[in-house]
Image 1 (cartoon, helix red, strand yellow):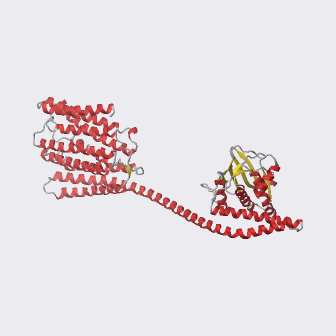
Image 2: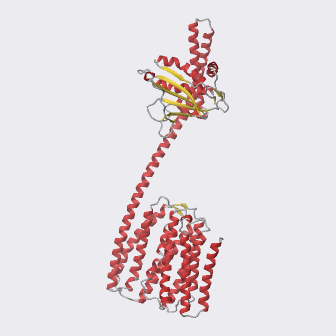
Image 3: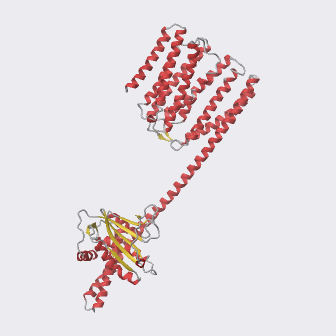
Length: 591
C-alpha cells in the first residue's frame, strides 16, 4: 500500500475512533455537538477529496468511468454542504436546525447524482452511445426525484405547515431513495466482475450501513431522544469513513477491464423513463381523489404533477429524437455491413469458381500435352529431314510455337496446382529478347512493331526463367492486343533497375510524335481502386511474380495500356557483360 494511501486510511480510522470516544465519554452539551459536527464534517471533507482525486484523466481510462467518479463526487459534495448547514446552526449560531427546514432538500438530493453515476454503467463498454442521451437520462432522474420531494414534503413545509407530517414524509421519501440506491448497487455488484465488483460491493456496504444508521437516527429524532453526538452517530461516522475508503481502494484495482455493452440495459432505461412519466398521472389522480388532503395541498400537488409532466415530456421527446437519430445511424452502418458481407460472399463464390476452373484447366492441359508432344516430335523430324531450307525453317518456326504452347500449358498447370519454382540466376534482358522473338510474327501480322529499351548492365534476378518468360509473353501480348493500328504504335519494352529491384515496363507509344516514353505512375494490380485481373492468365501472372518476391503493377490513371513487373535483385549478382552472352542466356531460357 502506498504511503499516501496509508496516511488517508489512518486519518479515517483516527476520525472514527475520535467520534466513538466523543459519543462514549463526553457529556451531552455544546462541546459534544461541536466535536460531533466537526468530526463528521472532516470525514465528509476527506471523502470529497478522495473522490475528486479519481476524476483526474490519468486515473480514468474512459469517459464514462470519469463521469461515474464526477457524479459520485457531486453527491458527496452535496452531503458535505448539508453537514456545513448543521455546523452553521449548531456550532456557530448555538441553536438547533429548524424543523421543517428548506435545506433538507440538499440532503434528499445528494443521492440523486450517485444513482445517476450507477446509471452510467462504467463497468460496460459503451463507446458508441451518444453522451447527450446520458445527460438527458440524468436530467429525467433529477426531475423525477425533485418531484418526489416537492410532492411529498414541500406542501407540509410551505402550503400548510405540519411538522409531524413533514418529518414522516421526509423520512419515507429519503428512505425510498436510499433503498433505490441500495437495490441498484446490489444488482451491479452481482452482475459486475473484477475490480468493479469490489467497488460496487464496498459502495453497497457503506450505503447500507448509512441507510440503517440514519433510519435509526431519524426514528430517535421522532421519539425526541436524538442529540448530536449520541450513540447513533458512531455508526454514521463508520459509514462515512467506509464511503471515503472506496475511491482509495479503487486506486489499487484494475477498472479498465470492462465488459461489452448490453443493449437490454438501454431498453430498461427507456422503460423506466416512461414509467416515471406515467407515475405523474397517478400522483395527480391520487391527490385529486384523496379526501383526507386539505384543498390547498391538493391543488399544489396537482399543479406540481402537471408541470413536472410537461417538463419530463419535453426531455423524453428530445431523448427519443436523439435515439431515433442514433438508430438511423446504426441502421446505415448495418446496411453497409450487409453490403460488405454480400460483396465478401460474392468474392468467396468467385474464388470457388476460380478453384473449380483451375481444376478444369488442369485436366484440359493434361489432354493438350499429348497432341502437343506429337506435334513437337513431327516438327523435329521435319527439321532433320532433307526438305528444302525454306521448308525446314518453317518447321523450326512450328517447333518454336509448339514449345511456346507447351510452356503456356505448363504455366496453366502451375496455376491449377501450384508447385515450387525452379529458381536460378536469370538475366531478364535475355528472357525479354526471347519473348520478343516469339512475338515478332504475331506483331508483324497485325502491322505493329516493337521497341526494346534494355539497360546495358542489368543485375541478375533469382527466378524460374520459363515462368518469367511466360509472364513476359502474356503481358506483351496484352499490350499488343490493345495497340492502335491506325496510329501505327509500337510495343515498347524497357528495363532498368532501382535500388534492389529490376523493373520491366510493357507499354505502347507513338514514335511519330517524336516524344520520349512518358513517366507513368503505377500501383499494384488488384489494389484498392485499381482494376482486378481481367483474365485467368493475368491472375496466374500476378501469382507467379509474387511467388518470386516481386510485384505486378498497372498505371494508376485509367486508359493507359501498360504493365510493370518488379523483381528482386539477386544478392552479389553479376550483370550481363556482352550481347553475345545475353543471346546465349536467351537461348538457354527459351529451351
